Image 1 (spheres, helix red, strand yellow):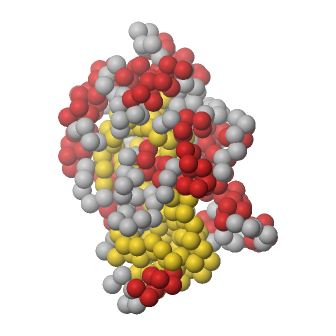
Image 2 (cartoon, helix red, strand yellow):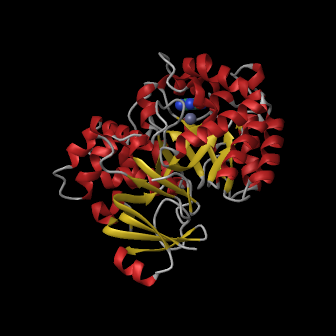
Image 3 (cartoon, helix red, strand yellow):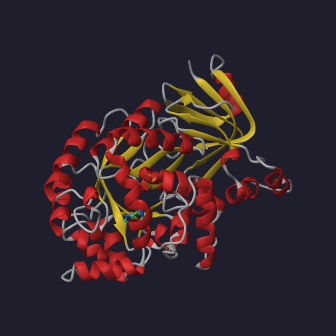
Length: 427
Ligand code: GUN
Ligand code: ZN
């Protein structure tokens, strides 16, 4: 039986970074018709109620129905060590991250964290993530199995590292290739799951391992490839030492066949003009991780790039300090302000939905409300706390009503979540 969700409805007809606020479609008394896991219709409530009298009605009143959030860069294995104090990137990896990732040698621990992580993000309205696992193949099985159980569309891959990491976290060029290939063949395209080829970053991969990842990607060209790029200045200096023959950081990837459409680079803060031009030319995607970039002290992403290539938004759990895409939108707003740019609420919301979907090249399936799209939805209470409610009282349009929730909202703002056409929590 079809479900008819009633409420305010927010969708996008275009990219607000190119088309401005006119790109958004807001229906005050709107409805979304869902059947067999997909969105069948989006429109005025009265018209859809009349046209579909048999549908089961879910009346969300003045709450806002949107596409679910898409977190385009996370490390689910870092769930338990989120908000670890006092380090910058390389020290943070060695002190907190690698010891925690070592624990994933135990498949039972991987299962526990994978399930815990997905419950945490679903409670915050995130219906899809693109995650790094650890070097352990069982950590990939754990997150895909947990996502499959929940009916989620999810991207993930085995993190590959063959140097500058503890022995227990190192594979080799060959074993990384073999394990990645086996996992890719096991999971890619199964239900709503996609395998992502995942060399961690140039400091922890030899050129031979990057080349092996490039070779694998040539064999499976429709996969995404994710890695990190130019996050901190110390890291960039280290890459220069490790790859003296490379023009710049991006070149360490390009030289091994790891730059083209479908490449998804996290952070990408301290880019040279040459790197920006090559990324645009190659059709690569960048992922902005604002809570991480402030928390680890990395720097301020240039949001001007969103007009020139695919930019997604992400928590970078557990480098980021929060699981919530609302909090991440707020940080994106603050970071842009520090660069003299005021992102409009329509742009912030788009980044967390359609922008991330475009970065992951799945914008025809998720990240928007339109007939034929998969029915991953979040329902937002625009007055979820007294502080937010009083700030919205004089709102004259949707954006004034939504912005206090973007800046101050948390899991209490998430009234309901639908995954693949199925309702997940009670309203
Ligand atoms: N660079 C390489 N690995 C990582 C990681 O786990 N988190 C972040 N923020 N940056 C990285
Ligand atoms: Zn990361």
